[in-house]
Amino acid sequence: MFRGKVAVIGSGLVGSTTAYTLMLGGLFSEIVIIDINRDKAEGDALDIAHGVSFVKPVNVYAGDYSDCADADIIIITAGVAQKEGETRIALLKRNIEVLKSIINGISAHAPDDVILLMVTNPVDILTYATYKLSSLPKNRVIGSGTVLDTSRLKYMISKRTGIDARNCHTYIIGEHGDSEVAAWSITNIGGMSMNEFCRYTKKCDLRDLDDMYLRVKNSAYEIIEKKSATYYAIATAVARICECIAGDENSILTVSSIFDGQYGIQDIALSVPTKVGGDGVENILEVPFSKEELKGLLSSAETLRALVKEIGL
View 1 (tube, rainbow, N blue to C red):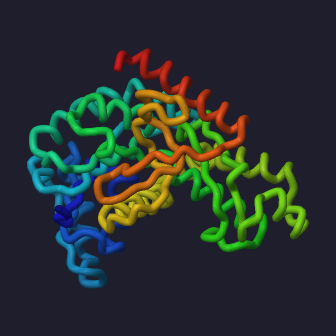
View 2 (cartoon, rainbow, N blue to C red):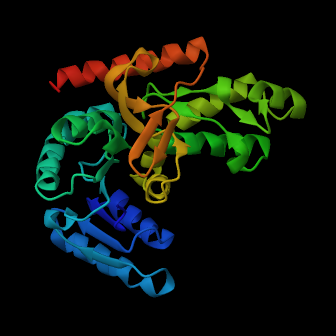
């Protein structure tokens, strides 16, 4: 049963921006922000709450883990910050201990039908760790995965072709990070493949595809170098995932989820086109990627599996 409440764990730049974005979206009647720094959480909640007269009725406040008791979705954004030049994977060991404490707090209060949405990086490994540390079924543990990366690629394609980003259909699959893969074989604009569209319009070529992929993969590093953190676009990506769950949309998003034999991949979290609805992950789609893309997806899975093994999960 949808109760209309979301809890955001972590009141840093990503957490506070996510709470603000959710307030604007009008998805929930109750938003609670939880942070080890209670003053920061209270300040953010008050700042956001002062704008509620302009949006749908919503109660925004700071709380603690006991306020997770009737939450529909718990969004985890807490963790140590990514440093300039630091890969997402390098964050792993510093963030895993933070996660253990969070899961203990959540598990003591959250309802059995709650959905945990992991946003903290490295998101795939922390999504898998959340599944292992919690008692929730696979479908109720989700990572933001490559939802943002996919949006970045749509943006790149739009800028290069002049087509509305909403009509540029593509996916980034695999790890949210250095081993991610652009699924060019299933990318299309108006029903035309990218190769066909480039030949038809003469606005792009194969070299552009490689450039767009590299720019997507390095986007976070570029933004962090310029302004120390990324938070606006990931907040909108998280809000979109919440919208799919709250509305039981059964939409297709590249969330990170626990694989159970799809593509020959077992017991690891990564991203492919996935049906997302009211119960979380409804179905992981087995898409006919090209051989090269499938090879990249399997390689991405092995990269993550090696790191999971290293931390003993």
